[in-house]
Amino acid sequence: MHTRRLAILSSTLAIVATLFVAACGSSSNNAAATKGCTGKVTGKSTLTAWFHSGTGAERDVITAQVAAFNASQSNVTVKLVLLPEGNYDDQVKAAAASNSLPDILDFDGPLLYNYAWNKDLVPLDNCVTPDLKGDLLQSIVNQGTYANHFYGIGTFDSGLALYARKSLLQKANVRIPTGISDAWSADEFTKALLALQKGGIAKPLDLKLNYGKSEWFSYGFSPVIQSAGGDLINRSDYKTADGALNGAQSVAALTTFQSWFKQGLVNPNTDDKSFINGTAAISWVGHWQFNDYQKAWGSDLALIPLPNFGQGSKTGLGSLQWCITQHAASVDGAWSFINYLMQDQEIQRITTANGAVPSRKSAAAQMPQFSAGGAEYLYIQQLESNAVSRPQT
Image (cartoon, rainbow, N blue to C red):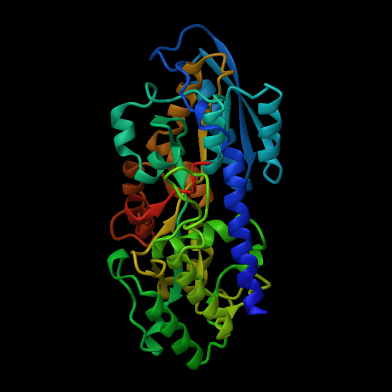
């Protein structure tokens, strides 16, 4: 059964890589459009902005932000359209196909590249000031760049890590890493899991298998093969996964991953509460679980980098970002709205609501949990140094 789960994972990764290639199309269409910001908003314009309908708190904040922006000046009126999260991407695709995209779009990072390649988006190179770009996390710059042009900018980013209980690790005589540079090796991590199992936690590792066969399998576990030196796709031309997804380094890493299932170390987590109720000692998941886990375990909670499979610990990146479409009635007007959202205080408002990682270093530095030495500072460090973008296809 455990081998079958890994087979599903491997197949899913392969399918995802194939779909990425199919979405890319011909590389002859990657020249950036010349339309961009002039640096001055002229005249009056009414612009439509599509936003995925996320958590209730997130919806409340973006709605309030739009209202505040509209009240702050008289040239630009933004009309916010909240669309259901489940089929948001499909609605964007349909709008692009029918040439009916809104002025401003909010969508997940990996989706940017196909729209940029298809010339649906306005490059933001002359919209984003050097000071703003220099204050962005490196992951935000990486995720928003395609064919040497900057197309998307987010107010927050994502990250992966291991959540663990210090007391259980100490009881099992397991070393607790202090940062990225001393992450557990894959072998050391396996031994830690076995020690926890021997200490009474029957299935100590929560991999969020309850998330199902979604993008979680590729986002959550691609760092396994990337840390080993493999990848989802060959990034020299983005045309094949051969030699990357099925290369010796990837196979070795996934074999180790498979061994955790074979040894009965992986918790099925069917109710999504295994770490909170104590039946799992380590949870492999993202930033979105921090608040719930801290509420459950307080100062006993440790945030630890993902294991190092040979080429250093890696993490995923990429979240929702704002783009301006070629249909925008006023590019400068659209940018004035996005630039409003990129203020430190607005970034802090949205990330307080959704628990995500602030996209600007200056904003993060003002938030205790993300500032140097804070409980979630690891996410900032990772997004600046060892995060790997999903393939640009």
